[in-house]
Length: 147
Image (tube, rainbow, N blue to C red; front, side, top):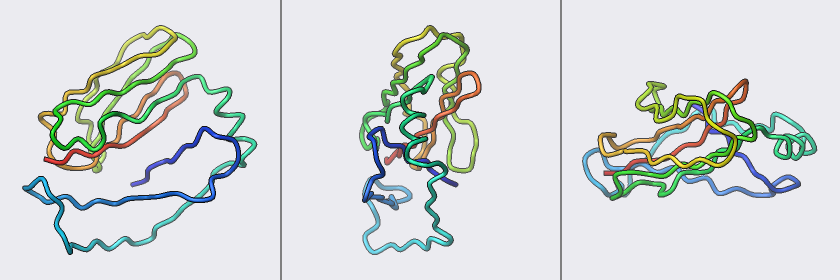
C-alpha cells in the first residue's frame, strides 16, 4: 500500500517525520518491544516542485486531514474538504486491504467547504484510507483507529 504525502508550501521539504505504530491486537496500548519488518520502502517525487506549486494553486478540490487522528477513545472523526466547482463527489473509506468500509458522501455537491462527521464506532483497530473523488480528480488521506 502507499500513502501520498502532500505539502502546501512552496519549495521542497527538507525533512519529514514518519511514524509507524503497531497497536495491540486487542488492547488500547501499543506492544512495547514489538518489531515490524518493512521490505522495499520507497519514496518518490512524481513531479517537479514548480509543478507541485502550480497544481496546489489550480486544484479543483482539497482534502484536509481528519480530526482526531488517531481515534483512541473517540467514536467519530471529522473530515473537511473543499470543491472549487459544483459536481458529483464521493468520499469513500477503505481498510488497508482495499475493502470499502464506508461511503459517507456520494452525491452532487455545491462548490465550497464541506464537513463530514464519520462514525467509526464499528471499525476495528487498524489503518484506514479515505478518498475524495470529484470529476477526474482524487485525493486521499489516512487515519488510524485504536481501541
